[in-house]
Every structure is written in structure tokens, then in C-alpha cells.
Length: 568
Image (cartoon, rainbow, N blue to C red; front, side, top):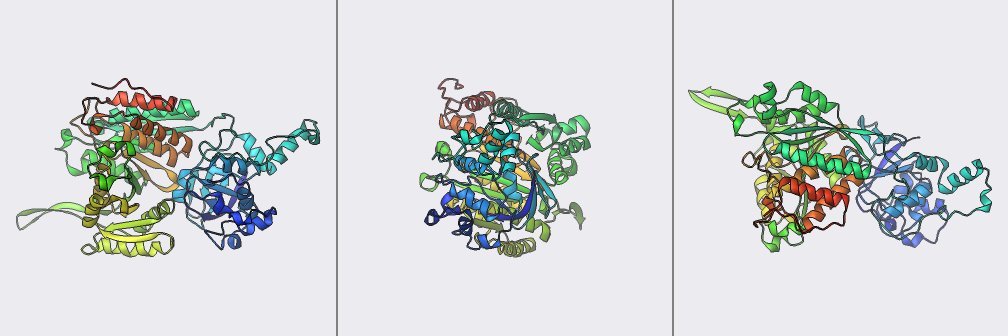
């Protein structure tokens, strides 16, 4: 079954009272309900929707009350499908019950813009963006849900099944034939619909352990993915590739062509870390770090997403005073990844006998436009605020950055745009981190600011990152380095890499439920008081493998609590 239409875009937590306001609940005619659909957040929605159009929204769509009018209004307005990273359970079930397709896909929200023309193959879960020439993967519906949708709803499907089996449906009453009015709201919306059905798709993941602690944390992340595979019924195929110093030792180059070829044949790449003092003598273009830059460029991953979240359970690890850190913060750094000074012209020369070196910062309009759109789309699903960081008072490249960012912002009138010089941003992150929601910035500035943001969360060892390209392909890695000083000691914190694997599941594989499972497991472990050495000044801490064991225990039994096992 193929659906196609133009995209209407909304943010996170669109609740049922927004979809159809309470003042219209006395209406029972779907056509009348359609006239008021989304009225309070887009007064023109009902007027501009064309039959077959598609809603792309942020997480937790349909939350709030168990209002069956909401999916009825959406379907009657002409919308053929709703795509979001996650849905409230009751809304999901009510939508399927009336034959409105509901598709979970995280990368779609990041990549698809309003007005884009897209099509959806419900059988395979493939979303094609015809405007951008990109495709994205979502988990396909089980066959019986496809049948419900094709028949127009659960009542129609049930009737057809009774007719096929020779049973007169007038003699039977189905307690599930109507819309669901259970007041439960969220978590695992497909749990009562999928009957534990498992996807047949094999997801190929390239593992790039790299150097230093890279192999240790990648091994941990692989174990966690295997635990999620067993719990969620997702099949993975892992392919290991060489990169960094390890690749130099084995092949003479920091990124062999075989590694690029294997990576491109996979659905995503999970990277450990590269570099170390062993290769400090190697010339610049052949250093381990050159392999990292090359794989980013080769894979076309231009948008680096680096969250910096202060968890409540780690507030005592935050180096800021309690008045600043109280209540926590949640910052998303959107860093341009394949342009700027790291990829500009560079070299050395002699000037009147004096050795000189240079690196050139250059950005094109296209590079700035595409990363700015990612930041504004992210902001739509968050607090609708973007702070663009540059050095426009000094750098010509920053002046173009600011100009283009302002132009892009006009397409997002609901998002507030502010500009901040990079030196002031570095200070403000320490002084008042809560003022930041989405930070948009260049390759160099983003590299520095995201490390600073991660450290004020308590440790650089818990923050993941995603580097996204066209079509949802991604390169995922912890933001920490190779830490050669602790390599092989079994004390590295695996959480950043484990959470990077979670981002991989959510953004490249469309496996939001599995990603939630990992993230909740990490939160449970931290809330239970377990710490690696970098997170505590105490003598009681867990080794890399022990922390991984605890995360896997939490995946297998979410309500777990085990006070034993601390490393003393």
C-alpha cells in the first residue's frame, strides 16, 4: 500500500486537545470535526490540507486525554498518514482502529521539511522524500495491521473476516471493534496490536573500534545491542572496519578503501575513538584523525547532533554551583561537520626564512543552509529557540553564516533566533546553561563548545553524538576521545557509546522502542547509584564490563535493583 502527499509539520507533544479542541466535542460528524482540526496551532490547516497529505510531527504525538475524536478529525481532514518518532499509546490504537496509518520514524522528523512531497510504502516501511531525493526507513506494519488499514478500520476488517468465515457479524459483538477509550497515555503503543510480531529486516551495522579505549566501549555497545536484539526481536549483522591508528598499523593508512566500502554497504556506523601518542610522529594528512575526517566526508554526514543533558541522578557530578545546575538542563548542539577549517585549504610555507602554517575557514551558502534547517527543525520539537554561534565581528565566513541563518529563519516564524559570539557563548554555557536549547554552529566552534557542554553535565564519558547525512544514514560515536592513558585498564565509561548506539537505533534504523529501552536502562542504572570511576570520587565504582552488565540487566528486567557488585 503506497501513500503520497505533501507534508504538514508539527512539533513535540501535540496533544488531543490541540488536534481537536474540547469545545467541539459535541460534534459527531467527521466532516465537521475536520473543519476544526489543528485550529489552535494552525488556523489555516483545514483550508490548505489536500486529500492524501501527510503529517510529520515530533515525539509523543497524540498525548493527553483518550479522545477518539482526534484521529477521526485528522483522517476526515484528508490526512493519509501521521509520521512521528513516538505516539501516545491510546492515540496509536484509536488511529489504527479507524484505519489511519501511524508510522514511527525518528529520522523523518529531522530530515523532512514542511511542503516536501513524500510517499510511504506501508508494506516495507520505506519513506521516499521526492523533494530531496532521499529515503528513510521505518519499521513496517505487521500484515494484519496493513489489512486493518486497507479495509478502512477495525470494524470493517472484522466484518470482512466474519463474512469470509461464513459467520453473520450481526450475531456477534466485538469488544474491540470501536475506538479504545482506555485513559492510559504512553509507552509502547503497538504492544496490543503487534502480537509480538518481529521484523524480518536484518540491520547491518559497521563497527569501527579504532584506538585507545575505542575497542572496549564498542565491545560494550555491541553487547547492549545484542541484549536489545533478544528483547525486541530485532536482527543485527555486525561488520568490523579498520580506522585510525589501528588501521595505520595494519594497512599503512588511517582509513582503507575497504573500510569505506563496507561502511557504505551498512545501514549505519558505530565508531569508538581514534588517535594516540603512538602516532604523533605521523604527518598530518596520514594521522589517525585524518581517517575520522575522511570517513565523515566519504559518508556525507554533515549534521553532527551532540546532546548535553544533566541527569538528575548526576547533578552532584556537575562542576557548576547548585544554584546554576538546579533542575538540570538539556542542550542540543547542532554542529556543521564536513566544511569549515577542518576541510579547508591548509599547508606550510617559508616567508623570509620563517616557517609558517595556515588553515583556511571556508563555508558555502549551501553548507550553511542545510545545517541551519536541521537546527530549526530540531527546535520545532523542543523549546523553539535557536542560538547561532559565530564570530561575525571578525570573520568573513561568520558574516555569511549569520546572513544565511537569518534567511533560513524566515521559514520558521515560530522559532526564535538569537546570535552569540563564540567567546561569549563559551562563557554563557558556564554562567547560565539553561538559556540554551538548540545551539547552531560551525565545525570548529561546535567541536569546542560541545565538549564544554558535555563536561558541565558531569562527565564527557556519558554524552553521545550522531552525525547524520541524506536519507538518514548516520555515523555514531561518543564525544570523548581515545583516552590512551586509561586504555586496557577496564575503567572506561561505556555509557556515551551505549547511548550513541541508542541514537543509531532511533535515527538511522527507525527503532524508537529499542532506543527507549536502552535509554531507560541507562537512567535506571544511574538512578540506582551505579557509577564508573569518572563519575565518582568514591572508592566504590564499576569497571567497564560491570557497568555494561548492569545496563544489560536493566534491559532484561527494567525494575531491577541490585545493591551488590560495586568495584571496591
